[in-house]
Image 1: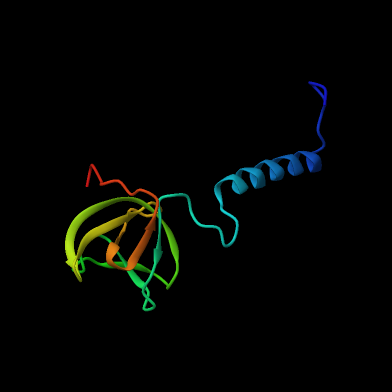
Image 2: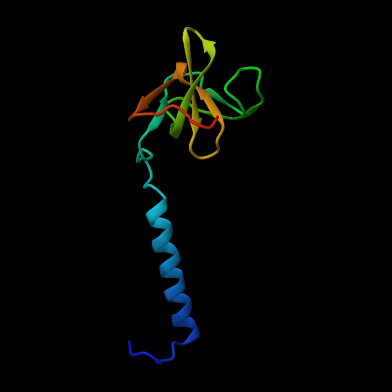
Length: 114
């Protein structure tokens, strides 16, 4: 297309829609695909509570079902859950899950500013 050529409104809308759809495709993984590493997979059939802080005394902010996969930002040592003191901070929300019931894939660094 030459510079200065006018684009009809309907065509302009199509160009904008294509750009938006293209940018969404770059940020959303295909169905069934694992999140970017590091990520964790819930390994307890009962599912797992997501908490505001790394403690069972903290408020529950959500939950994850069996075999759910979630991106992990970092880990800390906190409350002991069945012999495991690690908790993972979720990349998406900043909330926490106990590592006792999560099988991680990829290297999860320790949190620096928590």
